[in-house]
Image 1 (cartoon, rainbow, N blue to C red):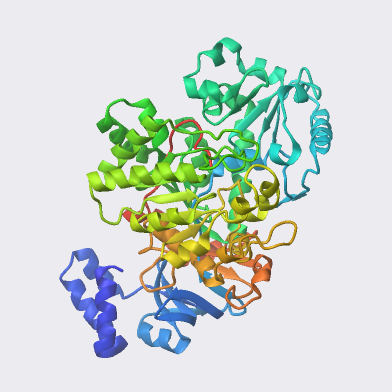
Image 2: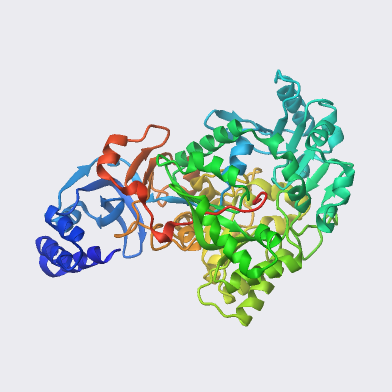
Length: 628
């Protein structure tokens, strides 16, 4: 909290509310003429919100009934009588909007991809699971034949025979291999692109390859690893091979109108799920693309803020000079404004491949002995880690396999011993397959984890039979071990890798129930309170925002999620059924799926649209596609 508020609260304890106001005004006399003018006018109007229950996650006061909000921040939280006493002479109004609801700290989307979500959610969705979107539910694909039939119907429904078709969601571990030849049977003339469920792989028909200008000569000239992760004959590209062809196919996968519509859908979907702030870890290093994102996400009527993180993979590839890597990374801050920003001193790196494509690097072989993949060659990864470590950046690393985690922890230990840093908070992101000895090492090295619990719910049954085997599949995302080791962890959806629905993520982490109805890895289950912390205060901690958001305490931003029930009181199996009424974002009341209460919010939060606290100045943009 600021010094004026701090002194006011101190005076409250010494002289009561009236004395506090006098003390605050006396303090203002030592300040500028503007401060003196404000003291003469008196404190601003406060709005006091009452609720059936308020879950604060403040250990000193876990539950209460009222919150006083002033200029987008929490002035006080407590019983209604206590809040009124604290306000003293300050004008206030009591708002009963949430009287029948439960308030929790605002949900945080720790690691999501709005551009990928926009493109996939606006494509022909043919996936391994149902997708419930604002326009209706799209049922899961049954098998490969069902996929081909439905994609053929979607292509034939488009009048323009040359209009490309993008479909997303196919998974070879569920439906079998897919090649360009399969897609050629659907159409020999219309470009068709299948974006795999992992978002780390694309398969194209011949018409799409020709339209994109992808030739054998071009693929043969790729750098070694990108060439290894490409199959021209199968018309299939993954990991670094996908990065290599993205500039050619970008115009086929999205038009400006499609991107805008997809971003608006993503915005509305996330706000309806109770999200009040989010982060994009990596993205597309193209100013026009970011401008298109900003046209939606930077708007002052956005229901949440969104930060962007530097993609270190792209930056070290673009600049040979270490100092220039950092300089150019910092310059990305100019790409954002309004409700978007650059995550300050934070960077995203990549270790191994995606879990959905079963290209994570494992200590022990896959069941079929296929190889995993590296998204950054070792020398490039080591350079990037060193450059950003020495510059004082917090490093977030995409890592899915236990061999991938070994590489990351080795690099962390090397740099920690070479150049010791306190409170570095290096984040292991995704955390799919790991081992107990690695949990101990994460703790000893001072790292933290952001896990995706949906992996268990979506994949454990199938991966027990294909790729991983029962033990590794069931122990994915071992949050229970992290808790027992005292390691800070948060939850993320990696949208579109999982629905950007914090209550659903909590349900996945608490219950670990698979599609067959069994519990996978019961020892890795966690409590509901731990899960709630995973989408609030621990998520804030992972982004170095714990002083601003994540709990309901005086001085923090008034970011709240409004629910029908208390997550800590319902049957854990019912977590995903709790209804989201809406959100409060820095004092703005935002019912889900309804127009903002604009007149009230404008009167109450005047000036808040220009919020520019350094702590919330994040956002980024970097290379081709910052894949999940």
